[in-house]
Image 1 (cartoon, rainbow, N blue to C red):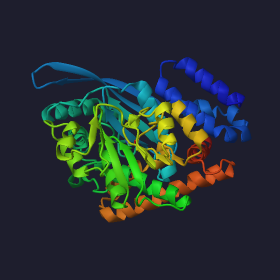
Image 2 (image 1 turned 180 degrees about the horizontal axis):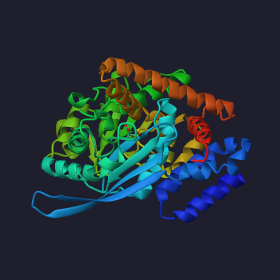
Image 3 (image 1 turned 180 degrees about the vertical axis):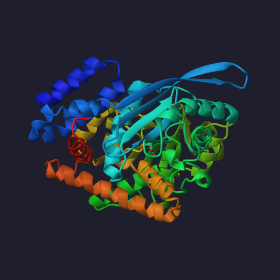
Length: 446
Ligand code: GLU
């Protein structure tokens, strides 16, 4: 970064929050990309645009006490980071994972603000969660934890104020329990959460939306180079909601998906992933992914990162978590002919890995564009709740395809306008920054 205002803002931020590694990483990557816009607008400095965009409007932290099945009292820390309400109510998921801390939620809330701007729906950005590990917990323990979490969170959220949804460790079951407790405290307002079970006001097309949206974005990237998914070898990391639906849609479109993974194991199946089996193993508390090779002896299941497998693949879809892929792993895959990367997770590439990808100049879709399908369909769920009129799932999927196409064109257009060629990461940051800043400046000093 050469721009003095960008440099100063970043330096000040890193001195103020030196331990917030992930947050600083996300801001640094973003600042690098928006440099040409800042160069063109020296007046932003007097308006303290950057300082306002990197400081969340509000960050709440609270105690979550709960009782486990043995009758012991446990305590976790819960958070909600209300990052920006420039474009609408705070919107973004809740993550239950032992890694959760303020740095991670600030990075996620920051990313969410710009991701939501790209969807074109009126949503601000936020993120929340707790350092609670749902693995190995009974259904009753999950319910008690969700109830305790909501007993504090309810006073900070609302259908027109802040609308949480799922993320890692939080899906339909947890959203159901969270809403159940919210309803006892505040009455029935289904629009307060998205990703609800269908019977409670959700939409069948929400769970697959992030994974399907990722593949819709990828399709556009491929089409730009005159290609399609049929016959392409695809590596996917993760086995959760995003990874499994990305795998399903890619397979439907004729791709050859050869990997999936979880925190303990990576599966490489040269014959193509048996998705139903992976889902069965994932959802069975008695089983683990290592059991995959019992049914498919040709497959290798290793206790290592999927990105350490030396495979020739055309496309990599990191769909697990932040910083899951480092520069060495990317280099190895590039040497083996990797041609495309599209992120299903938020910031899955380390800063170094991003640099390597940029130098290689392969088509690369950043999460804030390519995984925006989930939150976009959350926006549609908010509409159907506000209108009290359910939308048909295929109608929602149709809208999702249109939104992903629109996000793709915004990334492409902004990148070309600033002379970046077909650099989708550059375009995504510029297009979303322009929108948020336009709104921010019209609100006055807020
Ligand atoms: N957690 C998802 C994301 O990272 C979805 C959030 C939502 O639907 O509000 O975008």
